Amino acid sequence: MYKGGVIIIGAGGHAKVVIDLFRSLGTTIVGLTDADDKPRDVLGVPVLGNDAALQGLFEQGARNAFVALGDNARRLDMGLRLQALGFNLLTAVSPRAAVSPSARLGAGVAVMAGAVINAEAEVGDLVIVNSGAVVEHDVVLGRACHIGPGAVLAGQARVGESTLLGAGSSVAPGRQVGANSVIGAGGCVVRDIPADVVAVGVPALVLRHRLEVM
Ligand code: JB2
Image 1 (tube, rainbow, N blue to C red):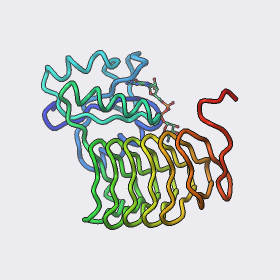
Image 2 (cartoon, rainbow, N blue to C red):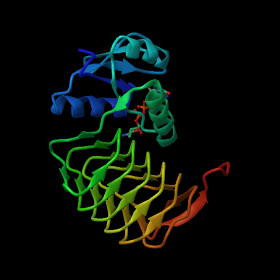
Image 3 (cartoon, rainbow, N blue to C red):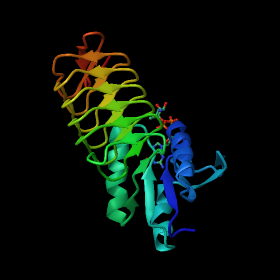
């Protein structure tokens, strides 16, 4: 079971979607780890403990893991930690997604149902391309960014590491969004957006720096 199966990190909302995704691919799910290690099932999958259990699972032969934490910084940290422990980060592409053969996907990526990734797009490690999102040709997505449900990136757009594009947002052709930024749901990026900001609206304008206290 451990040999080909996957351990999923996280037992919240994102993990539920990831469980469905692995089931649609026929991948055995060994179990989940969660910061809350109370014994329970999520969609019939057992919580095996917290992340302290990972070393022991590796020693028992588990090799494949997937980080199902929606928080981008946490997902990146955990992905690096798993790789340091020796785990292989699986990439999971829904059978109902359309991914160009020339697109390049990193490790630990989730591509959900209805998503489209077109020619020569580059998708970094630990990225989420969520349900129905469109990543057009030659787009570059940095590590651990999250392209929210229904978001659209036109050709040659670029998104920096750990940035969140909210549900239904869009980025015009060739525009750039810096690292660690957030584009609010429905926001439309027609001018470049810097790193470390929250930008909202149509056109998307910077609302605040992410480190500012609200
Ligand atoms: O370091 C951790 C850790 N930090 C939080 N390790 C492990 N193994 N688990 C951790 N968690 C757990 O992640 C929390 O205890 C909680 O069970 C789970 C987060 O659940 P939540 O439902 O709050 O968020 P999510 O990350 O599963 O989903 C978010 O991101 C998705 C992409 C939500 O915003 C969803 O709506 C969104 N679709």
